[in-house]
Image (cartoon, rainbow over all chains, first blue to last red; front, side, top):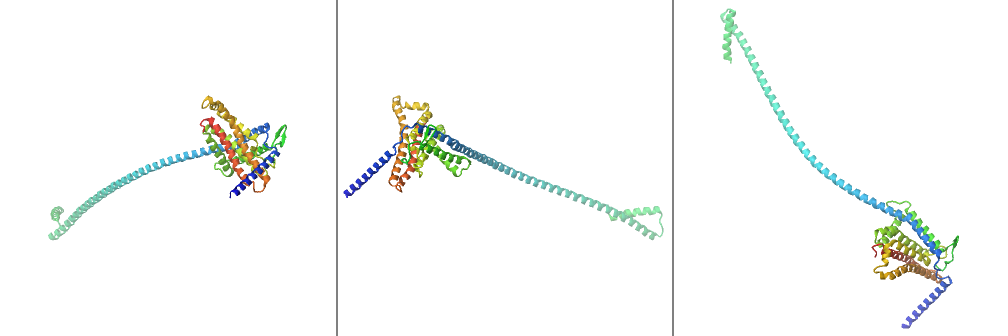
Length: 196
Length: 223
């Protein structure tokens, strides 16, 4: 068991030796490590590096940095705008609430005023109607009274005429106008007193 | 694969030689520049597609490295440079994973050359000094002036460690993959190539995080 291990190790080490030997021979045949210092390579590399830096700065870093800054500004302004809008909306909400409360109060006042006005109008109309009714009644009563007086007067006249005619028939003669008048008047007075 | 690439210049522009690694860097610049341009060509407030991905990567890197700096002002100022380090190194590391890397000229991870990693580390060194200013000098004398030699040693060790760590990892990985490809070109190197994806990301991240922490030491609220 142990001998197998040692054999494997020996083979491995020999392989490594062979590889290293081959590597060394290849390395030596191809010129080995690059010569140092090579002033041209150093110069070229310095120039190339700074050219690359300039190109990347011009076309890479600067536009990206500007874009990032612009994006940051856009986001900041958007956030600020959103905050302003939020404050505005809040203000508007408060205003709307105040307006609503005021409107409600005003509506209540209007309703109260309208109710009061309607009540007053009702009372006024009622009072006017009552006054008119009273006036109509009084007018009707006055008319009735006047009609009554007229009827009484007519009745008196008719009664007088009838009395005269009756008297003429009874007396068989015509009375003188003076007698006539005096009698009638007496009669009428008596008749009127009786009637009233 | 490093073996197939040559350390001889690919061509010359006047007297100046141009190497594979430099062409690879140009390809990286073109690739990253094109992606950045296409992503930001028509920027929308609500991002979509490539813009969204690019913004996420850039913003993520900015927050990560900027946050590690711990100082908002410094983060705004220096994060772009740190992100460039990260993207440059990451893309360069991944260039070695593209099929044909090493055989086609220009397709090599330029971070497998220590001239390049040393350059990047030197840039970090100077950037730290510039970013720190007076703080950097003050940092050399903390916690006591007696520590100056030690602090100076630390300042020298930092670029050295940055250079060797990145170079060693990428170069080593490239060598192992190249060797395995020589030994057994089919399937065998696959796990190591897959590991290369992780190594490339980790090394880019480590380099940039270390650069960030060096900077954070001198720009104020360090770690």
